[in-house]
Length: 89
Image (cartoon, rainbow, N blue to C red):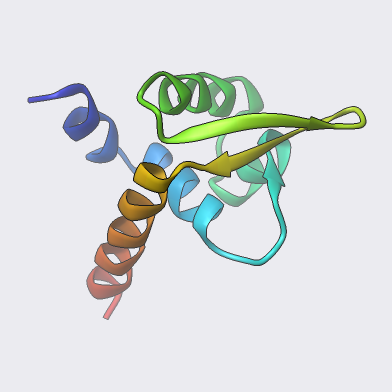
């Protein structure tokens, strides 16, 4: 199993990725941790892995470290979002 398969078969990383994809506003780690019902430190570890895999990029706006999906991350987030919506049907 690849690193990405192992990561996305877990609910927290999947929720965080989908959380980045939902809504109009740009997000930061503390918002994502609340949305995914995850600790802040665990969220940051997941986000670091996402960055290593080229799924997200960080940018700073004042004191906030905002997170943006890359093109590849957007594709995966769209697919995961659709998958999660289908399971909830």
